Amino acid sequence: MKKMNNEKYDYLIVGAGLYGAVFARQAVNSGKNVCVIDKRAHIAGNVYTRTVEGIHVHEYGAHIFHTNNKKVWDYVNGFAEFNRFTNSPVANYKGELYSLPFNMYTFNKMWGVVTPEEAAAKIEEQKKDAIEAMNAEGVTEPRNLEEQAITLVGKDIFEKLVKGYTEKQWGRKCSELPAFIIKRLPVRLTFDNNYFNALYQGIPIGGYTKLVNNMLEGIPVQLGTDYLSDKEKWDSMADRVVYTGPIDAYFGYEKGYLEYRSVRFETELLDQPNFQGNAAVNYTDSETPWTRIIEHKWFEFGKDENGNELPKTVISKEYSSEWKPGDEPYYPVNDAKNSALYTEYRNMAEKEKKVLFGGRLGEYKYYDMDQVIATALEAAEKELG
Ligand SMILES: Cc1cc2nc3c(=O)[nH]c(=O)nc-3n(C[C@H](O)[C@H](O)[C@H](O)COP(=O)(O)OP(=O)(O)OC[C@H]3O[C@@H](n4cnc5c(N)ncnc54)[C@H](O)[C@@H]3O)c2cc1C
Image (cartoon, rainbow, N blue to C red; front, top):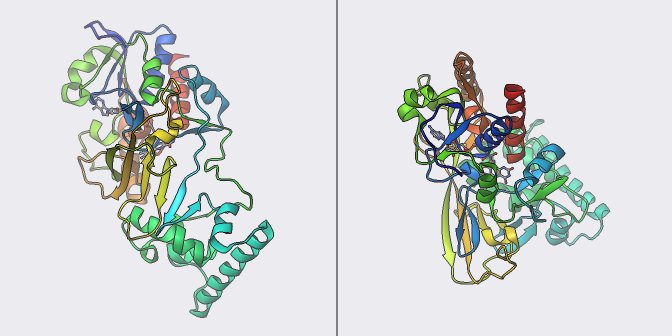
């Protein structure tokens, strides 16, 4: 990364996350003069990884790169080498361990069934019991998430693997949550723990920060700099602005706050080589206060970049938390109220001719990393030709 001087730029990029870094790279490759600012003290936005005892700690939550988009996969591989990590989370229900997503390993552990036929029969039997119990009460359509989930996968899977986890995530009982939240609960009648089932999957060797640093090579970046606190000055320095911060913040929350769901992380360095033997363990009971524990070293098979075993480990406990203005925005809430508010801001954004709004905060949309890269590439192509 280069230091910024006070020249005039073709593009000022606000945000050094994936969207900003991809756009900046493409603009520079098209011969544009570009600078990047970020209000945080580091690059890479929410995919930032901090190195602790040789372990790349996913500071803003576990990030697993997965995609079916070959163009995006080839693009990111131009900036980092990816390992063969496959996401296969484990569920811990009161000390009983189950494979996720629901597959033959899960059903064998749950019921002792061995063949796909036996598993399918067991699931059907449990679904039938649930539907009959509902019908006996005169109910034909699931009235809430609990009834919806039980009619999709039966009582045992719901009770042990869905109920507690979902209630912790939403902070409400499944019987008080709307049914539409869970449309499908896929079951696999194969021995397959590969959560994402994507064509391409892995973790950038050396961490995400290194990946983004490579994208920003040779581009001036200024950190710890809030665009909105000195907007006029920054606007005067560039012909065009690419803004990847929150769209409501850009307009001073004039129409109100867009809401988010939040997550809180408690991270600890432990003086032991192995805490849970897997990158992600979901706690699916309702008594354990956290939803998941991430053990970061297993994203890279417990080794550093030179293949050395790491003697310590870092874990992060994840807690779902209520969001209030000022908190870190994580997951946009796509309900009618927030969608309508976003549309108002979107209409205002369209009048800002100098500014292009992009990324998960600029578009108030949950994007996986591959999607955010794809949208940045598309926007850059449209903008730069
Ligand atoms: C908990 C969690 C887990 C996730 N796990 C996965 C996963 O496993 N796989 C996957 O594919 N995706 C995952 N994602 C999605 C992934 O995080 C996003 O796709 C990606 O981070 C979006 O990049 P971005 O550039 O749009 O936003 P960001 O990374 O948020 O970057 C925006 C940047 O803009 C800066 N900024 C904001 N306002 C200003 C301002 N006024 N002035 C200067 N700078 C500003 C911010 O500091 C930030 O650095 C996850 C998301 C979350 C919330």
